[in-house]
Length: 329
Image (cartoon, rainbow, N blue to C red; front, side):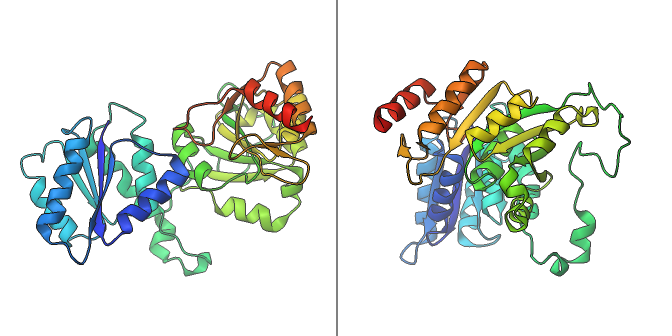
């Protein structure tokens, strides 16, 4: 696995490392190097050397710095001498860049230089402005259309691909589309579309717009009521589409499956606590209706992947349900 050094002025590197961990989970072979007021250039170099020595593969190192020409960059530039054929430096560190680098490491054959070439694009795409009218004209012109997303109206009855929509991930998450989904899961699944399936949110213009705006670069986000998702599942025009489905509740997921959405596995990511629910772990809270719904889903042959982010180890759904039943009485 490629080792990653985050080298910045002040505590920025530690802060962005913590932020990325909240979204993507704790990651191995990553080190934060800080240049504090009391440090000199030699201290930065020593911290980088210590970091590389701790990596599983010191031949593959990616150094992400905050400023081109700053002390962290200059020390990295000197340190890379003799490793130019394998190591890489990228300046302008931001969170989309780091998340993309984490996702790229899922491919264990990826090299530091391949990842470096990839993440420059995500770093640039992550810089946006709202309202969109403030976006420079050149940036608007360069924005690519989402891959494999049909542009414009397609005549009814048209068959694309094999005529059956593909589901890269179906997830239950009270917050629907947020950082952990838009970055961590999107990188792991690589969908063409993210579809939030909720009657309540589809009728709430504000929440609907917030979800659409939260989509990562290159991926189109939609919010649809459950009946509409059931129609999409039968529409051959979506045969070339790989979708990520997001449900607020297990009840919505069950209703969609009963309506013909051909899901075989559900990622149980986050269910918020509210009155009448019991916490079964840090991110999941169930009430009796939730337990009953999961039992119904089990009867339909649905499998469950219980984890918040891709790097987490899956939990056992039976243990979760038994704990909920014991707590609820």
